[in-house]
Length: 368
Ligand code: ADP
Image (cartoon, rainbow, N blue to C red; front, side, top):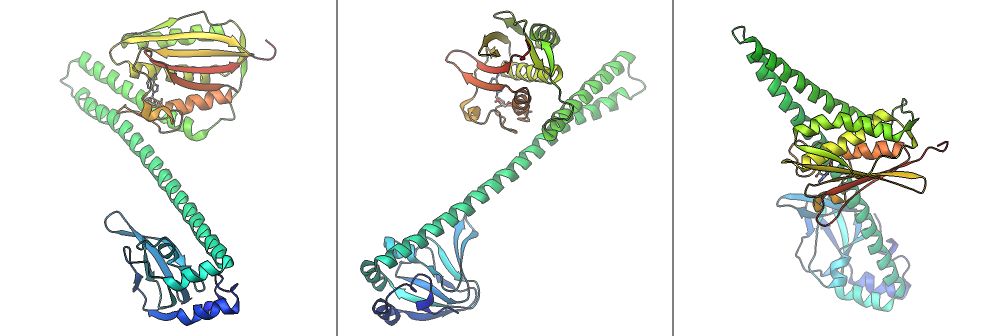
């Protein structure tokens, strides 16, 4: 139980300031669960909890009530509507059997005008409450964001697994029929193998993403021109099937870079796969190289529509996907991780009249 004059807000007042306050204050009792005031009520005064507990809540959506503040004995509530002369923006409810002091608006305003100390104290109180509200709000938003990331993750994995699994299921049934011609059984087996490959790729992508940098990540001095020639040869057949050509604007520099060729190959594969996804009819991947400030920059440009503005700011974040039914949103975040493990940088940009341009820079090996 806290007497009015001992509440932190009023305890600093001089005796002559306390007298009118005490005279104007009335004690009110509320049983547990009773509303002290409701959203929309007039802000006719402030309250100080003498005994009990008060919850300040507001309606979120059509029927969920969210408690955003808990007021303990000695603490004040209801001051904002009084100072602003506006209706109550929240509801105050007795969370236990509660006794409060009620001080009418006129008395509070007259006191605030007379006592700079009270005004400052009130300001401090409101500021602390806003700060607490922000803290709570931010942590709730973060939590909701985390949950939605987990949800998106689960959804995209389930989606990506379900498709190949149902194809395998159907094909296995057909291929297993003894009266089926041998070649159609063979075609079925090939289709199953391809789908198993897809599941494997997906699992590897998730493992790669969740493991972070593996202990086996090693950089070895590698001739970049030779590396590029090999990766391009590996990429060409799959891209050709989709009517996509790789074009080199200039030759890759024959310098030595500290590379993990397996990992860097993944960056090339992901960038090429994304470019191909952006050009469903046909198109070109234009690759160019530049050397400056001890770095080799590789640019991937495509002839697709460019990066959608909706995703531009979160492109390299995990699970950021846009405009694809099968996107996991992991590809570019894996690219970023790999490039950073090479002590390099990766960026993306759009330029008018051109497709997406991805650019990554890798440091030239010191001994080169
Ligand atoms: P995913 O491809 O699984 O969606 P990524 O991280 O690889 O995940 O890519 C994230 C998003 O970036 C894609 O969904 C797409 O919207 C956009 N994006 C990536 N590459 C390109 C590109 N070459 N052209 C246009 N948009 C692209």
